[in-house]
Image 1 (cartoon, rainbow, N blue to C red):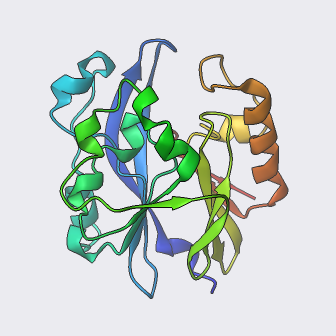
Image 2 (image 1 turned 90 degrees about the vertical axis):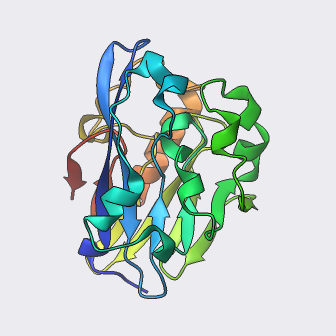
Length: 220
């Protein structure tokens, strides 16, 4: 199934400061308006903000971001976390009715992420669907393994009427990086694996690329 490009809706989920990179970045999730039921890619960071105060977070509610597009949190049928860093899975608990798809390798390493509060993953009704590689989640929506930022990172490919669209997660941070600008040190756990995953996404020859930490969208 090919979705119209406008079925991918970027959600503004605030912004954070990364002290180790001395930069402020936006945080985005993505609403997927799928005819079989709406889905969500990444959920931003959660509360209380005191838990991540060193990142100077600006509060943003994913439920409110959805309401701006006439979607209620209870309408979400599935959630995909690109990985389990705090700014990508922090509001999963808003969607207890929805299964959360994440790579098994990522889930098994979740305790290594000291900045991801355990409560943001251990909420009432939490149902993680653990993946061992690539898989179609809904018709035309597929996770693509892209390790490097973390060992179990995944990106999302969506078939659209204009061609494949990719949501990079943190496998690529910006338009400039997708175009060949070198990433900054500190953006990945393993630089060589990160580079191979970035090349893998380029080989998809996407029509559009959507980023969690860039307000722009790359277009072919």
